[in-house]
Image 1 (cartoon, one colour):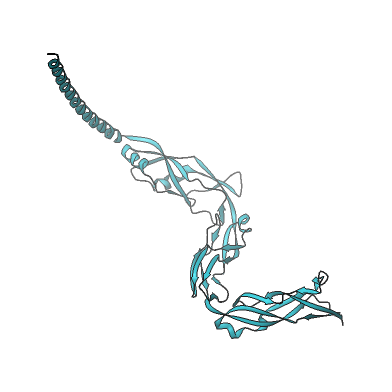
Image 2: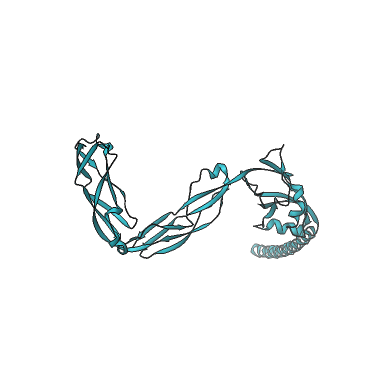
Length: 332
């Protein structure tokens, strides 16, 4: 008897629960529809709001360069329908508007020749033309922008390639690396340009090089400095090499006219790698081995160190013997 009553009560509870869930589902559905209709109705109204908009400054005054950083965004007070504003605010990447110095007059601050300001209200029409026709631009904030300019100067500087070359076995550089153009004109604020004497290319790495190549390499940008060229061509001549040895006479530097200095031996034997096409061009006069009389007083063993101060550009891996020579000093 008790079990039957409990079973009837349970069945009645399950039926009421199912009816309640059904009613809640219907209520939720109509609530969602009502919310969507309300939201769509709101989007059809006009609103005034502020959009933070990316900006790019163009048409800089001739012969001047900006000092410091430019603003990256401007606040635009706009009026539009809700769905238009929603589309703009949900956009992940707005296309920057251009703020042209050619369209908006620069005005000096208290007669200054370097500091200027612009009234952003003067740019309303220019910037409005870049926005959607569905948006009315009412104001730009801040109401003014301050800029500092300095005169630009030009300077010719050498270009130096940054190379890391690993040659294949029995190959080497055949002469000097050539850069075209080997110098460029840079322009910018004098305070920056005066500190730049060489422009280095971006690094270039070449592995197991066994033939001549020409590579176009970009020049890295320098903030506020303009380049006449953005790239240069770097020619690297490569050839097979062979070993060579040659006797080179030793020259005495800084010897007084009243003295005679005899060195023993009078020549050094230079060993080097030479490209095969220039093997028979190798001559002693292309090298310069020297000792310096000014170091005689520092010599305790009657010997002077030999230095190799010049050699042709088609040889590498130089070595020579002896490194020291003995000497005898006589008066003339």
